[in-house]
Amino acid sequence: MIKVNDNFCKLPGSYLFSEVARKVKAYAEANPTAKIIKMGIGDVTRPLCQAAIAAMTEAVKDQASAETFHGYGPETGYDFLRQAIVAGDYGKRGVKVELDEIFVNDGAKSDTGNIGDILSPDCKVAVTDPVYPVYVDTNVMAGRAGELKGNGCWSNVIYLPCTVDNDFVPSLPKETPDVIYLCYPNNPTGTTLTRDQLKVWVDYARENGALILFDSAYEAYITDEDVPHSIYEIPGAKEVAIEFRSYSKTAGFTGVRCGYTVVPMALQGVNSKGEKVSLNALWRRRQTTKFNGSSYIAQRGAAALYTSRGREEIAETVAYYMDNARMLREAMLSLGLKAVGGVNAPYVWVKTPDGLSSWEFFDLLLHKCSIVGTPGVGFGPSGEGYFRFSAFSSHEATEEASNRLARFIK
Image (cartoon, rainbow, N blue to C red; front, side):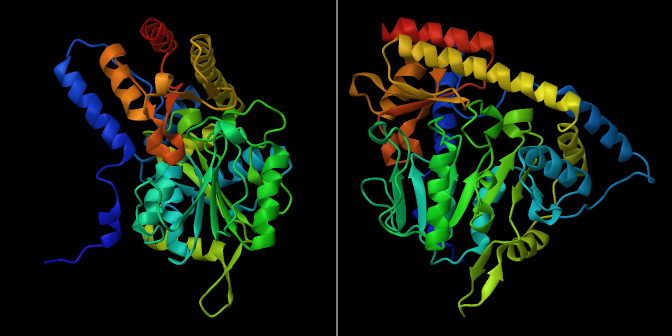
């Protein structure tokens, strides 16, 4: 018999969103006439912006001619996209990022999961709690997480609770981690860190030799001036942080698959001999070995997002989803429910009513209102008793969901 990776066997039976999908499928089969409103998984509903469509259409035409055909591209991404990223995402904010620090990928999920390939299995990992499940699950797969305990925590993971008691702002860990995952604007709570609050983490990482893995997939939704769009806006961050970006939630690229990761040249680790090693070089070696690059067509579409037309259309899409978030947040508060998020992020994090557990509230909403959200406990122990609503539906569906909730809760 073939021996398997025992770490995979430690994982719970299914990924959070797979379990949500399973329950929804069963309900839909049993209730074929039900009009289900899905506000669970963070998939978008708005079509791709026209600037990206036009660019990808031309890119498809390129593939029809031998003179303009593109086969294997550079594993780290085409220069035309990386140059647009340097100027459009960082230069305009006064942040200097080099071309060779940018690695184009097939979406932020891939790189946030794969980045552990270049880190020691002995690294101690810290996560905010609740947290995007991929961060924890991929460390379980790599053997860093230890064993799953009865309270839902992994024995070798440091949990940083984000609750109403600390205004959903994590405290510095009492035990020193090697790697710290931060996602801001946050998924799932929809909360943010101010510039000063993020500086605390950068300073901590610099003082303790820790690496911050910073997921800024939702930065386009930030409206508050004091909330940084990139961790590199904080002095010294390029010495301690890797940043992940995505076009999925801004330009509708959930199906197109394209994003990028920034690994600064200044970032260094040490090998087992105590010798300093460039993390940029290690990630480059990993990518050139295990990844063939995002498609030429997808990258042409992504580059078009940095044109004036592309930026205008993205702004319209973001505003559309944020109007949904406003509707959701206001509806929850008007019903007497405690809710955060929905201001600088497309998620609303709601306290379940009447002491219901997260899954109990999920089942009630599905079977009584035909509404799908995400149980908070699926994001970690501190998520129990909470529920996440996504703002990525249509205006009409969001309004209808708000009305159904009002009738049900009242």
